Image 1: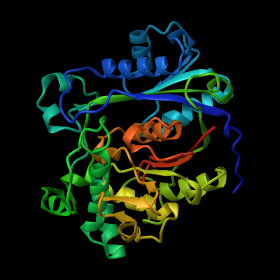
Image 2: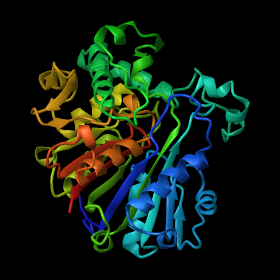
Image 3: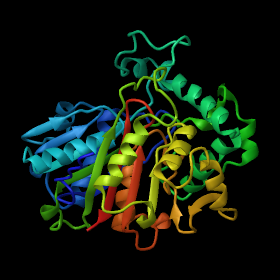
Image 4: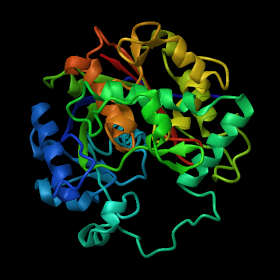
Length: 389
């Protein structure tokens, strides 16, 4: 495999901001949430809206947010699909290519009719849900969330693990979220709580799936040189990868050992200057608990199927969470299961805050390197290595 990484360490994240997240109707629009996070990060980075010449986000559309913020002119914009490593990688590539110099990357998570029963009953949320009247995946298809249910069963069958392995991911998330004032789900979770939870679709229960939330994150991405002149320590993008295999549909994926995660890991390791032995904080995606176990397996922390045993080996009983080798937290902000379904913007924001030393109670002492493995198996596996300048 020929590996090129011409962008390595030449683009930086200068800052990150959040509105915080709630698992209920915030009474606000996506535009207002995205605007709040965006204004805050622009101010933190010591720049003006006139300095922003690129916009990249999911919701709302770039033209809408540009108008809301009063940004006078853009030379580049994009609205890739989630998860959010895609947006950060796309923005970094645009900066490196010279299409723009300062990109505002944003994401407004929102409780919509497709991801929340409460939102489905709300006429205003139904209106705000694009494509609601389009045909939706039904019980006869493996598309969307049903696919992870099927592959969760496969993981249990192939490796002889139990639901208690999934539970460790959920419990770790809640324990970490308790330290994060931005998290939506901060109540403690025990093994008994997990095992008594309502089953949504066998073998996944209520606590195996990230809760829909209202809230937003925003980032400033620029050249490494320009970031040095901004108030916060620059976080350099060492490598970014979006991985996919030829059969990437939920019901066509070949096996647990041949999907997008393997592509991400192989390529990210080849492009990065460091790997798991050198990192200070780890961010595996946890939209569904089996995704996290697969990332831990595939990243090389343990052999396939041993992620649950690995978490037990590194479990800190007094804190009810995992600390790899006694020092590396796993999703210290609570991940998607604890903070809310941010589609990985929360993972990236927390990584930036950790590396800038502004993570508050959650701060890892002298954190310098972070690994983010975002997305799932099928069409959205993504990876990112970041380090402090």
